[in-house]
Image (cartoon, rainbow, N blue to C red; front, side, top):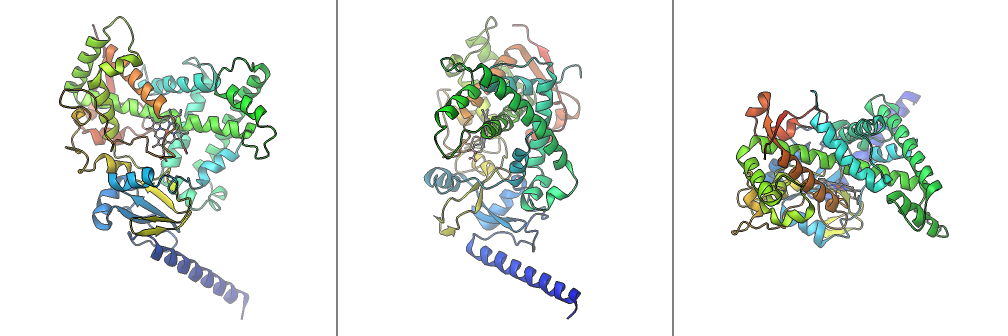
Length: 442
Ligand code: HEM
């Protein structure tokens, strides 16, 4: 037998073994759309992205189904009952986080006249800077602008189709050209910058008066020096700081941007919010957190803005930490699991009129604010967003101070778009928001 024939035989054998393993795994998991060999459902436009397709998949396969990201299965959970059952009632079992090779690869590298959206990003990031670095940046500071650009490129890539492909084929992608190469280089710069800040913190650390997150981390690492597990290393600190900026800056400012779009789209709601701000806060001071309890309508509007998003955690899923018996299935340990938060927020069993933008979802008959169990923009359970309290404060304070001072209107063809289209069109990399604003006279 010639060498070519032998190679062909080996290849055939590998492919057969591979498909056998894939179909064996498939038999154990909840059913779902048929995956293609090697590619799974990756190229099937009626399956991915899930945020756009989950409703049809739910109708066909029920609230628990499996999709395949290349050769890797991902179990998808839909609807309040199932998502709550997993995240809260089986918190330990569904509390893992799968390896996200693109994110890990990045961590490995050390190293108009007024653009409203950019300034909101800077404002929100400056809050994180105060917490982490103990100081804010000037709005014209090039270092902060550059960090935000790097984070924006990373988050857009991470959530994109190419980002998913990277996570499916992490061994091949580093050798191919593409946007990921530039992102790795950028992260080296960011790493070096944070490293510098950590060093200067170390030199000026006062144990009696910790200034910020970095100081607290450094103090903890001193205390844990004898611990062999070495969790509190300098590298870990830099990765944590990067993680906080990645998770905390764009997420909050994007919600804020959407909030303004909704206000401009629904002027009657904007007026009602402004009336409440005028009555409770007036014009002579800025709103504070203590005002929130006296502003149920504004609070309800903000909640409804976050509910009315067909969000999905498909690019930031969970992983089962042990073999998990769940609703008639035995999901193997180490299986990727994704909760469709959009399906919870539009669950007709939980919301009176889910398809309508209605702040009344969060108000009782007396007009007082009421929490809803099926409100989960920060997810739920063991691995829920640790920045929720900070994000909620930021949303309330920025939103109310902006509406206290300005009225927002849509411009151009955005005037004719519905809220979903406005949300979709205002994706991360689409430039400024289609808004104009006029100062209020109060
Ligand atoms: C409106 C703003 C925000 C939203 C909607 C949001 C939402 C989320 C969601 C849905 C998750 C995934 C949780 C899960 O897997 O169950 C998450 C994780 C995370 N968020 Fe947020 N977040 C926001 C703001 C923030 C802020 C301000 C910070 C930092 C101060 C932050 C830090 C994190 C971190 C570190 C994680 C990863 C947690 C882990 O893996 O255990 N987030 N966030």
